[in-house]
Image (spheres, rainbow, N blue to C red):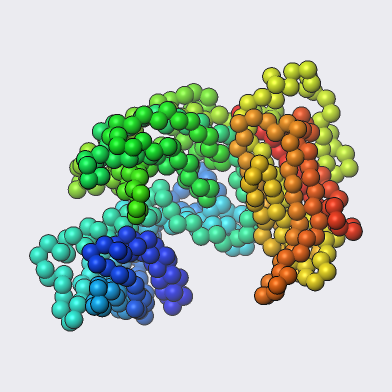
Length: 465
């Protein structure tokens, strides 16, 4: 496998180092930093022992001990003014302890849907750097500085609980975790933050997200020139697994030009929360997730947050009876008190299951596009299909129920090669969401407008905490 792993790892190294190199371009007269050669060579790593961890989840957790003394060909070129400086990495040795999680376990070969890779601690990396035939690592103090820099960058990437997740099976073929509740977050204040600006202050803001989610991070407002900012801002995050998910908090110093400096970070596992109980956390900010780093003694300040996990109600979205392939609850609510019964925040889930008899004039590679409240989301494209199956679900966190609102869905086809008329409209439908709010959910096939016989199968659910 090593020749293939070599190419895959090198591609990951390129994507991970691009933003690091970009930080220095434009500074110190540096015009560009790029790889001339990037190959890990022909000698593969060796595994010296393997630990298997037992958990209560449907997953397999492996912790191998990996040592590698290879023959890589890594050459970096630094363009400085009109000069080109070539740096070669030599005598590279690495010892690391990755955690490899195969999850979730499913009855579809190869029996796991995702591989998640993280590092239990910062890897030990030893190497030399050659410029014009001389080893610059012999310069006093430079070796320790480069070692520390590389370890810090590696730690910021994938030190547990952060992980690199590699999908193995299509989400349509496995049981995907569904949302089970809402995490209410109030970002209160921070104290004694680091001074990052020239004038001895910072412009802080907070990014927050849940582990295991690919959704964009939530952000607070920016507090200009303030080392003790108060935000008191509230956010709602979708929770899929309160037993394993972690709230990630990162405080940044906003800069008008260049990358924003991270002032500190912290994590709160959701398993520490009791449902419906608000709990305040006063957290010491860390440089990175390795909180036991003896070299990290700098005080980075504190952040105060309030958290409350609200599981969805057991009767929310409950179905009563079925007819004609979809479900409706025609009674059980009082229309005279809609604001009382249906008010409050909730989650709207839209499942695009598939379509039937959709056919284009020039090509038939259908995909569905969902339009709601200014957001546009689309499914994957199924090539050469008249009856595509997508089974893709989209979520919308709403502050109030979508009474008297509609969701618009279009089915399109796209030519795979180059063409001036690459897209083709196959049909559309507007779905009134009032019934969804009243009944909890709908699961129905809709005839597509502007299509001869096409129908689309959609399930929509509204749940409140």
